Image (cartoon, rainbow, N blue to C red; front, side, top):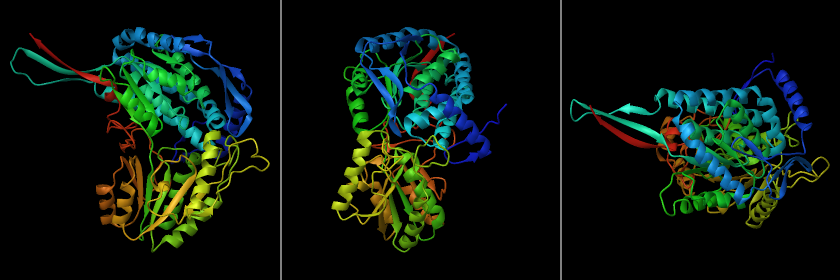
Length: 522
């Protein structure tokens, strides 16, 4: 029996030689299955569909078609919603402990297949080995954590006070019904699993649409849920681009939507979903996450933490560190260390050993990178490292770019405030912590933020004044990244989230439920 590993985004608890051998084996096995065509999954049945075929290609080598899917039609989407609605009374009617048993089996299946799932994500999403394995591990932990929440709350049923001795009163949280789960490409298993698990554990049913860039791993999640024993229609998978997503968010028979993605799309959903009736929307919409470096900081720790958060998964994390405010007294030394660490980053096929930076996800991101570099140079920014699309041998067929650090842009430049979702880091000098926090808070986003200081008063000021839902101090493993279920609640403030209660935290599952007060006179 191979040794089991626990790899998160922040820790490595493994014999890496054994890990890499198992990963190599998984990549080889997965590659034997590339090029197949997969159906939608509605009511636990394969639906081969009538829409046009689209390919999920390897962003490291766009000539390699990993899997083919069909664009879901409105008729197929309607069938998925109807299947979810029909399954809802059955799934809701189960004792919550039985639902938990099924969901925990899904978590166990994810762990059983985690090398295969991680290998798919390396190929399809461009995640390096440790990022991909962390994604798979987090997916299983999310299910278990949300199951624990409902078990500890005894199904979210609690007694209330009495106005008379013969009165029994109780607050009960009840599921809404059929939910749409719309997932992004960057954490294609963890976010898909976390959002759907929150809905399912609570007793809702799901229509799931993954990103068009990562449908293969989304289909595997559907297979795992079905194997775990979810009843027909409890989890339905449809593939497609934004066109079917747009139709899905307008569907009148859905009871809720949970979405992770860009702010424009999230705001569109928030405004349009509740036209004739207020319906719950749980939305996380990205970030423009700052790291602050003060004179008392351990600068080696700060440089490594910033590098890892800025360039992990090619900067394509909503929690990525994309701007740094460093005190002018230590800026030169900090920058020397940051550039030294960035220069050691290995770029290449992320399914291969010892590669840190893979490709950006698609042509749009590749072109956006070039536009950003040109704009930074035009606006007097100094490209300290990177600034290039990589087109040499080994990179010619993929969306590879160099990790890029820009200095010298004015504090008001848009690159300090607008999310780029690229391996592109803007640096600015500041004169005080107060100035750094003020500049940090000017952004419309409020997802993650980090600080490096050994001064207790500075720590207190940072935590009390920073406008972000996820905060870290002195974190070598990631200045602004690396949240884990039950360890770091992941909650967006301001333009980064809609509910004020985050994934990975103790209040997530309740958002998929509504309260019913029950009074019985004996």
